Image (cartoon, rainbow, N blue to C red; front, side, top):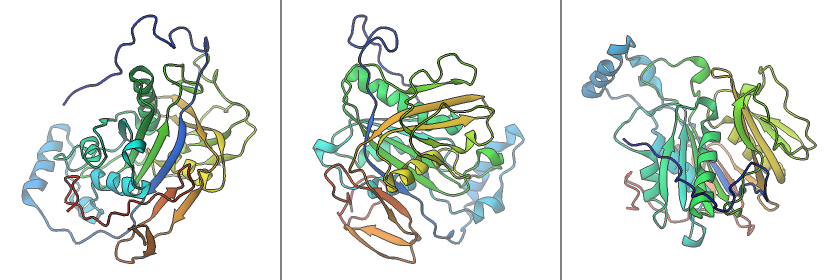
Length: 345
């Protein structure tokens, strides 16, 4: 395991100085997709070694292995969910591929032999820098976006992929407010054209923090997470439409609501915001959803393979794709099978 952080910016570099002291920029959303499989769980085949591992893992903390819960769960790994979102995102040629991939998740995976970021990197052209971020609760996606944009500013990257995953299978009991009720993964492909310019409209902190909403765009549409429903705070006024995320998806919920808003034709500046009641923190970020990024819903039990949408009752697939800026529906279209290694069979 290792830790990673944005590289040190040398004094005097472009973009240095107090916030708002120079031209600023916001990330631009150019393509987005969601993968939310709904097929029922397959029959559980007990694996004594794995069950013993979970029992030993929880024993020092007094947490028993929840065998019945685990057996009844869908047991889809975070890698499988991320691959589904990546496929729904569509084929990414070299000139459209991300230079940076940041994976965000709030619920730990139950399989520890795979690293999501590494597996996603293996399915992308080029050799993007890829890592994961967690332990930020429902604000994990916001932290991942902030770190990703900082890398872009300091390393000269112009395109990044934010992959947010909610994985519902857990071998131990999880507090209701932190549990993912269904499996979901959202992929957001973003352009950063600001170079080293300061980021506008992105902040995270306690509700009482001065300047928390200093970069708020009053003309933007707002997508609010479920944490704001009962939060003792009011968002600043806004001139655009407002959308609130549904419950049960601690990490992907607000980003799913963003895709829904885009699907309904919301374009231009959009502010995404959520609140973590456990830590008392609020996060918000501004995105530019350019005209032409029109959402497209692929219904439950549909299949998205080879660029053709067709019914497939056996797979229980629900994916949400979006048009890229050229107005063409992005589909992977390679008809490949996958053995989990990132190589087409």
